[in-house]
Length: 68
Image 1 (cartoon, rainbow, N blue to C red):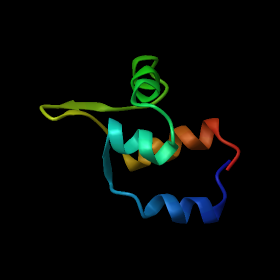
Image 2 (image 1 turned 120 degrees about the vertical axis):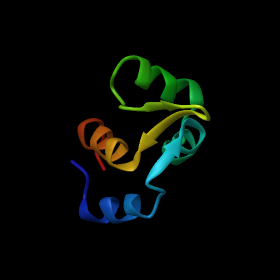
Image 3 (image 1 turned 90 degrees about the vertical axis):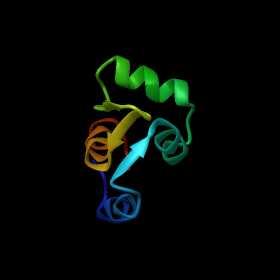
Image 4 (image 1 turned 180 degrees about the vertical axis):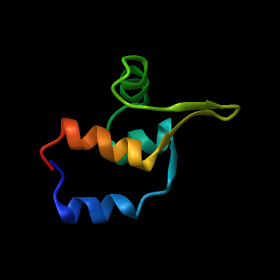
């Protein structure tokens, strides 16, 4: 479960993130983010610029997979 402090910190990130932005936010590789998307663990949508992740979907993923 994400603490209130962590939720406030996550609200400061952009509403829509690229794979690179998401990887930087989570301090992991872009390949890890792509793998999470491919497995259906992290929701994303395709655009002409590449895959994008809504901040809310990132928060939902972290709520289920984090000890924050």
